[in-house]
Image (tube, rainbow, N blue to C red; front, side, top):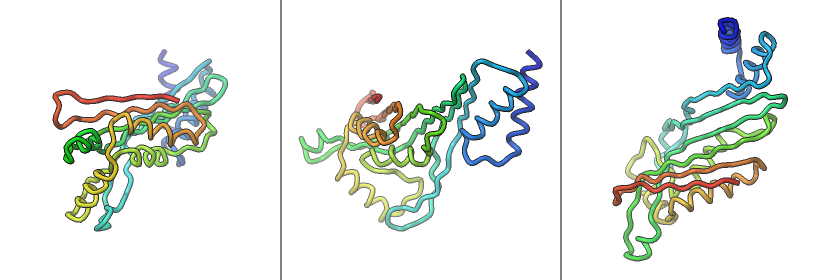
Length: 202
């Protein structure tokens, strides 16, 4: 047991000093190094992190840093596979209330997209984040000036969506990858005591 722990520790220390273009590339190199020192039938390595993306607000064009939760798993069992997952904050605006009364309620929501594919598939976490963001009623921002707030509100009302609409849109936009895709969305309801959850897979 101590030999295995020592092998993993050495491989991690050696690889984190090198430059890597992605988390999955880092994971693959670590697993390769571990296997060269300690053979295995199946190896997995996972990373959980926050990915900062610099954006500009929609109207005032102020720079803002948006953090997104990401998960990367690399699997080697004779072939190389990877699992990529992003979790993104957005919002939903209720279509039913808007149609029924001309007024409606909004809520913050969290959408997730998980892709499982061959390691060689060229899919970036940033691309997945864009897919989820574009599926909400509107994007949300850490920094908003008054004109930005007005734009977000207008965008939401132009795109009323149920939580299941968000999930469907994430999956529809993920078809281009040609991989197994799983989508989730949870809406933190503003007028109910409960939240609303939707999931789907292709």
